[in-house]
Image (cartoon, rainbow, N blue to C red):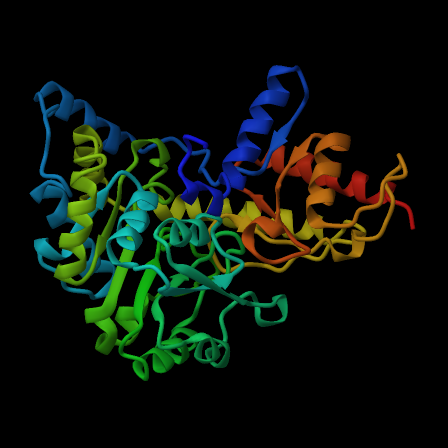
Length: 401
């Protein structure tokens, strides 16, 4: 009998973290590898945020805090939700965890019973289905095609809802596609949800501030206030504020759910890092002007990557509204042979081929629930991106058949 719990047999390790580990391994061997797998801004955390952390250290704020966030950080989150999203919460409607991932996990563990269904549009962030499985729920995957810009269609949502549906998870802008829902698109989704009051709405807004070309971000409870009482709106400081390592995520939602999430957290990690909470408070309360400056850089990178990928034989790449990912199709490469005579049968074969032949690391589309695609993160330097795209173009040109 194995000492490992049976529940682990239902899930797999994170594919995106596996790519990062593979890149580190190959670089340690002396290989010239360009890693485009990590969803991590290459910018540094802004100085005013780091200064707040240093001040907190000097002030001795190194003790335990309230399990699910300090009063000061909760107030900063309340102010942020009101300022940016016109959503009004009280402190007992706010949860703070060690990153958005923990907040999502806490919410699912606190609410999902065995057999409950959670609707997940695909492509999806790799951890959603596995978290549902760990909570003994059943992920219900709804494919969102490239022809529909990788966005959930209202009629497909309605078909997926059953009496067992507990949650739908919505992520806009999306990881991995960068697709984001306009007001009208989101309103069509919330109109369906109005018809099914037993369905709760879990919203991952982690890329809220990373939108381009004048796109106006909206979140479901903002678009349709009637679903506010059954919506958990999750966000964090990792992406927009370049604070991935600080590990602070947060959520606003119904008191009953927030209280249950705190109970889960009290028996796992307890409070998030006290210094990180001080830094996150400064981030949310501080001058936000740097966001627009950084977005201009991301937009330039996005446009360059999309243009260069569309010059690659067998690849087609859409232009996303937000985040820092593109999700190109490699359908035109499937069925071709590598110079070594191996047939490219899947998108995983394709990303393995460009890694081994040209030293470019991406994540295959199957990991996100929709093939034949692959994800590229353009949260790295222009130089790296240009070189990576040139290498991919070379690899595509070398395919035969």
